[in-house]
Length: 55
Image 1 (cartoon, rainbow, N blue to C red):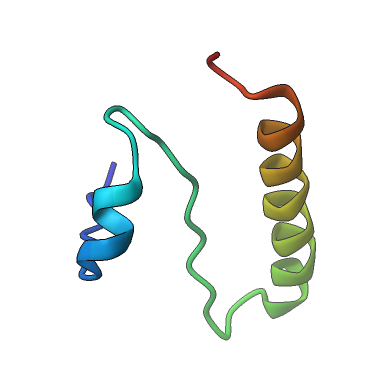
Image 2 (cartoon, helix red, strand yellow):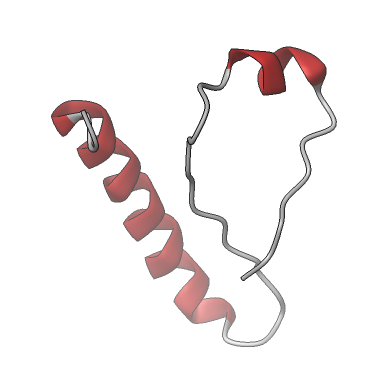
């Protein structure tokens, strides 16, 4: 588990309490897998938007 600190106060202020997200770290190792991970992150984002996960 990691903690991601947002430096932009405007973004931080607009997020509701208890919000969660997904982060991916891309390196030069396994770069061919990065494309699949980007697609999966985008799909998960759309699913969360469409089905309003947690609401």
